[in-house]
Length: 197
Ligand code: SF4
Ligand code: SF4
Image: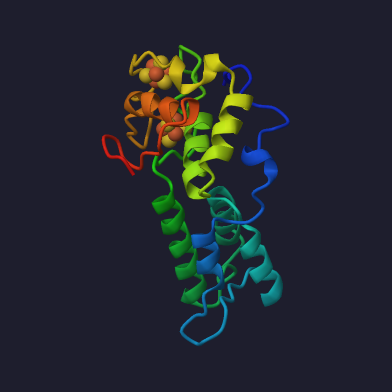
């Protein structure tokens, strides 16, 4: 699949790779004592509990959470966890990531290529991470520096071609002017369309 020019590169990790920790609301879930008064103790196959906890706490993106869950689910019976507690923990983390992301983009890239060159998932990820990590100015700088103008949200001409392909039914053409205003023109962040957040 052809990718918009300039959308991949050595700075593929948003925020320059500085975000090695999950957002603080997610970190709070990982470290919150459970009903038994202990920290979370998810068990993965062949891993000591302490390693498992460490692995869980190193999951800094929703993708990493999902990759680890998928990996554990295919590795055999009872290999993800010995208790429902760990699965519930993953669910809580997943829900928190979703809650922190204004645009429910999964980065599946089904919407690509945009005929006008907009780097749709890249643009949405920048927007979401600015709010998720409470680093709007960092993401504004990143957006301007690492996404060429011809691939930014401002290049959208509202042709709607992408919206037919999006399994999340995201009103992409409506979000694009908002994203451009917020990341490209330093306007205040918006949590929902038509709602100042
Ligand atoms: S609506 Fe905008 S982002 Fe979507 S395909 Fe058309 S130009 Fe690209
Ligand atoms: S198709 Fe939708 S969910 Fe997938 S990357 Fe594009 S905007 Fe995001």
